[in-house]
Length: 146
Image (cartoon, rainbow, N blue to C red; front, top):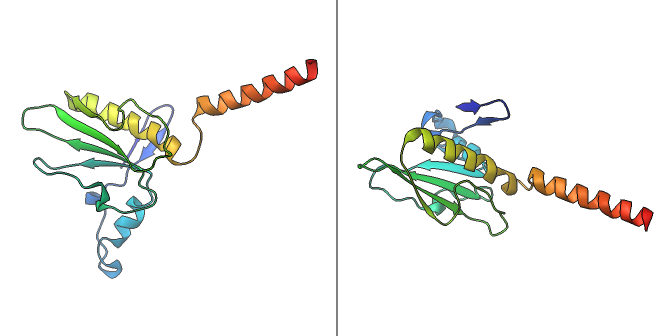
């Protein structure tokens, strides 16, 4: 499953849509794909809880967990499993977010996943990279004129 707009494209590993392969032990191939993702979006069935350790991996750094409710809004939690993951949003880690409708939910979760992937993958955010480059240029100019 994929999504795209004018500026980016996202491919989602949807385990319920991935075939089971009996030769590889059933779910092993699914885990290989999902286990290498930095950000996981988990839809939890009504009444269930989610254990962040249910998918052990050295890559799964951020879990965006969606809990639908009987009364309408969605409860969303963002859990970070690595201390070195920087800030991202719009949905903030270690908080419970209540989102009123599916359209808003999709937009916020998608944007949070995109923004969370940047610090998880070791790539600096564009503004961080730009700030570093501008600081470096300013120091060189200052050294030449100094």
